[in-house]
Image (cartoon, rainbow, N blue to C red; front, top):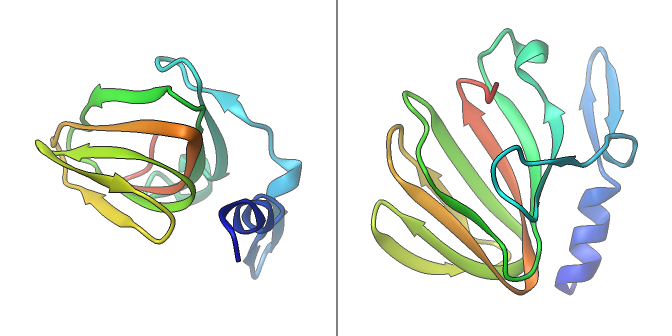
Length: 130
């Protein structure tokens, strides 16, 4: 399966819980408050989990980036779903491509730079992103 097909499957996916389902296609894309060309789709929010964790789809437009930042006392994970780019995690640089999973430890400076086709990740935060 190519990147585009996998991305489309994930974008049309759903969260299934005993309480019901959330269809990803029904959720809006929200512009990142700080980084231009970065959008988030909030799958599981802080409100859903009492602040314990949150899940988000993040897409970074071609040539744009999630600039250098860190999260105080918060672990973040990324699973690359589509596209390509570069990730810098605690000073180590590596290629982002589908199937790549990374963990950003609390207080670790990190950055994601999208390649020519952009990049989409499934991000999880512990505790939740607020």
